[in-house]
Image (cartoon, rainbow, N blue to C red; front, side):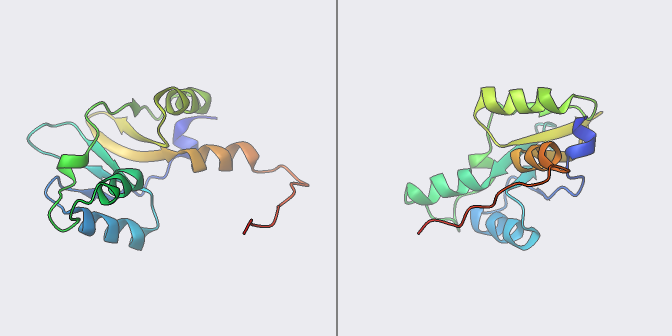
Length: 135
């Protein structure tokens, strides 16, 4: 299976000057765990994840003052639509992240997440046991 088969092609894109609150609101409305940050000055997309927002809040920063650009990872790993899904999973496991921006040419065409990988690898399996939530 390829990344193009697993990725979400509906990508939430924001600018680097969006506040973390604005980004969180858009992510919540779209029910996604990341936003692709497009900075026309750098010509290279970045990614802002729910973990980035959580880290900022945990550090006591103001989500109305902090910008997406200030919390976008500098060392982003990108995937290509033609990668094997195993290759994307290895990149996520090796890098310790849960989302990959998928680039085709110069722009983002999707995002593949750990959840997407799990969905693809477990679809069609029957007899899975669902355990009750703890607590």
